[in-house]
Length: 205
Image (tube, rainbow, N blue to C red; front, side, top):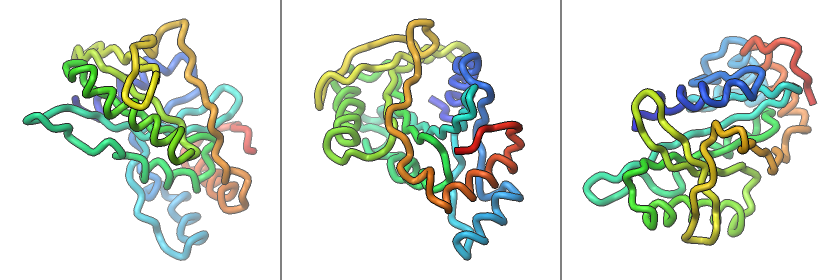
């Protein structure tokens, strides 16, 4: 699975539910935001590209880090914890919520998929209590119309198919707010980010 392609397909399926969705944004290269970062920290932090920034209809600002998993030569292409550090780093920038989404190719055996997907959910929610949203998906990967099946956590090593992400019966929920969003640092960075991304009339916290 090509990660950039999957992100673009997710954007297309989620677009009707959000005011605006931005993808593949490198915060460190945004002119106005770059200056604010240097002023706040005294240096320019190394930032990876933010895969998705969702702007809610009431002005909520959410960031999503997306990681794709395949199996090569009997082994997963990346470790189960991949993306957690990058997601946590986004909390400082004033997003209302930060999410990590893991995408798994549907040709992966279900028990192996659960050992990664459900185990990561358990690690984030039950073991560490990190202030991140986490969801894992099974992707039925037709190149032009991939189906993103949301997986339901059932235990540390088990899960089950829930619904496609574009189903009218499924709603993306945001249950774990950014605990730092009301700090002066986060407020300043959020205001600079909104300006740099040219998101008009957004409601600031």
